[in-house]
Length: 111
Image (spheres, rainbow, N blue to C red):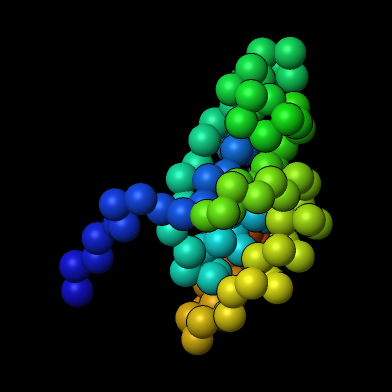
């Protein structure tokens, strides 16, 4: 089956790859099968000009919704997602697979 991305994903996530909270938010977006745009931000807060201009905040993660509402921080974002989107059938499979990969990475790092 060929999947295509929507022309205009309604959710924008300001995040970094090294941020554990950003990772958990991305994981939940995947579990919910939601299309989103991941927008990287600079490491240094004083360099996050685009983030501040778009949201008024300099911390991550930040989610902009389709209605341009701003949700800041992992807890606020996860509460929003869980309150507005139904969990699809495949969500559990994504969680199980992510946990298996995480365990494997930990085992490899310990070896």
